[in-house]
Image 1 (cartoon, one colour):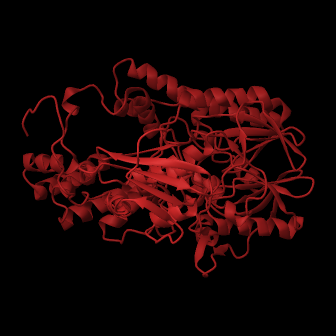
Image 2: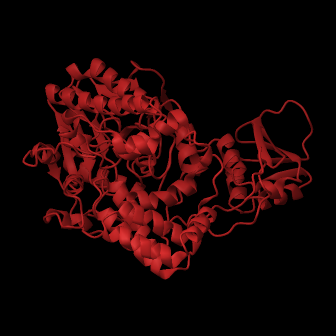
Image 3: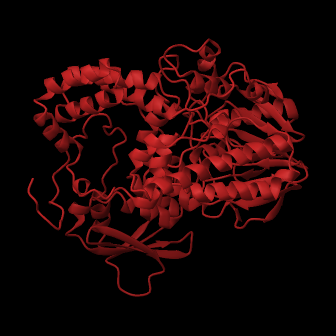
Length: 618
């Protein structure tokens, strides 16, 4: 909810976004080895036109800023590639080469960015890599800039969290990520114009090289290619594993993704672990205390830098206050008995924050961030017994629609609310209609129109993208393919993580009656893991000390990868009941990368009724 408008005549952001331009990528398309376009910066040329009625003017302004692309000088010896992907890639010149910070989402844009840098700064080899945190847009392109034979620095816990987000729940997050970024919406005033944090993500080859140097504590100092770097650990902020760092000899501060030119997410709409607004604000304050006075420029893994000690201190202080205010006021209202949706309607930002462009919810939003804070402290249940054991969406919708006189009556009522301007409740009613009757064409058409109008009015880029992708799928557009994140990262996973990725695919009910243990002897790692299938759960641990397995498989880690994707592994040997391998892999359920979101999920095989304290009746 807006109380104070920023100054539309203030061009500071545009001046900073253009400052230091060395060269643009001409043309602005990046292709893979097969010639397919994986990134197209030129597709956003329409943003130079005046804002149309189909976009929020503030989001249009933000997208114009994010669409700027090229090689930029940040300060002496530090350069950024911007507008080649969702994120920035930063290049820091050392004594013999260049250190790469956050090599984008995929390999092709990262390589194109490095090539552009080299055309203007010379053929410097990559002498180090830094991952600021565990999100894919900050490591996925590493294979395009190095083979890994260099120092690769990352915050402690990086691999654990990179895997848990991109592999364990990767299919669901990637499917929702299509809505989140709007990557497959047509680019244009009626479609995708950006997501506030950047324009979109590239569609190239995702890679991961495991770090070989951990950053474990604040104040840790490292030298890479002669460049001194002082680190600040910030776990639990924008990512579970994240860090800021300072270049004291360049008077430059990298804030990773902890301070960007928007209100960030405390819980992304694509799904993630809920972030801690309280600790986020405290780490921002610590960064000010540690580094601000000794910095002339602050830059991040998205957006454009802020120059000047006073200016960057003000910027960081306002970002700090933003997260602290949302946290504290949400808790105040929680303790008045309010639930998340009520708090989201009532909370207002202070005028001193609202009038700044960089506090606006282009990527996160006050509304869904407040609900995330509520979820972090109070969970999914709001305390009202009526909400304790509700029907799932489709079953609930059938009952609501019955109470309201059938689907046609619901559609008519929804159209009345739509015409009266209450798009929010029109969407609620039409959603019930579709979940009760997924084949009702009029309901789908009406809801698609409501979603479009909600999207066109949204200041938050991710809200716009969700609404417009929802409308697109309601109108029958095919569900787009998505990046196979797990395949691109598999080579970097530990054996434990590989077995975990098998465990989460076990079809529990089909596995109930199976019980067996397999020892996996890895000749290339000189270690043994045991997997035990018990009560539908696959447990794994290293160096089993007791018990006799039903099967022993002697193999290498690459041979395990081959087995996981259904290929025969000629080098592996078995001792015991070899049929258990067929049984194990036959119990795996393939994830569905195109599951329904705006219509009811296709009927699944009925499972036994869950245990409950009270039958209560249906």
